[in-house]
Image (cartoon, rainbow, N blue to C red; front, side, top):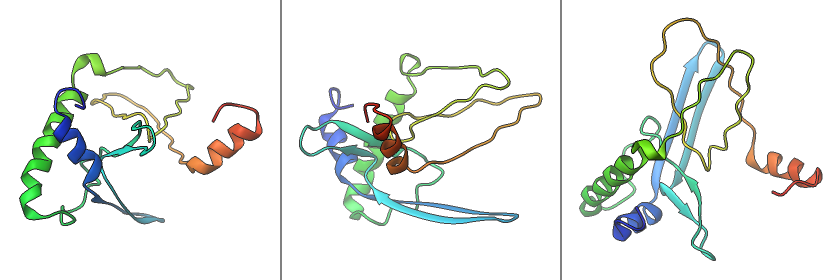
Length: 141
């Protein structure tokens, strides 16, 4: 997107949006809120360090002026088309017993429909804790 539509890239990296996740299933209750642009760029080297791309958790767009909303949606469609190009996808079929770790700041993930039995177990770790442990173990973090 940066190369094909730099003005749209800039919009996606500057306009803050609200994200909201509400879960109320059994004993699991969460109400999480975050605010930030879709594309997060380090100011000192212009490197992308995080992408927020989840249409299900995006809240009402009331954090930006009305005249910017249409341009934002156009930019978001451009990003969506780029992300969904087959050459930008990597598919993995997991076998029973396999574990997959995903850095949610750097990798988008999803799944297609599935028939048959499967059991998924999710776990979330704070980024600070993971990077701290990696550094203590002498790993590059």
